[in-house]
Image 1: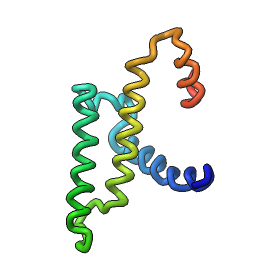
Image 2: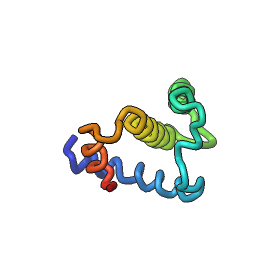
Image 3: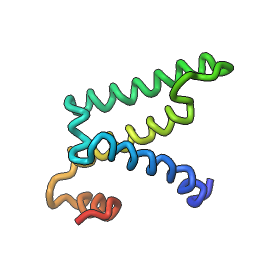
Length: 107
């Protein structure tokens, strides 16, 4: 997979995240995960279990949330958790703080 192919796959994932963020409210994403690591892991587990369930019934068409939808959600929740981990581990003045800011284009 080329970087361009990767970008093409990730773009709809990012677009969905932006749309859902508007629906849920952008104020504080992490407020939806009040128990920290446990909340994120629980959400990831739920999405993985959804995929396991769908894979066991691969010939059936789901009524809601396809494998594709579930994978997109799993990617987004993984990124949310990654953000949480980085915020939790990076202290002001840490050399990784500059890298994270650069990646996120934040001051």
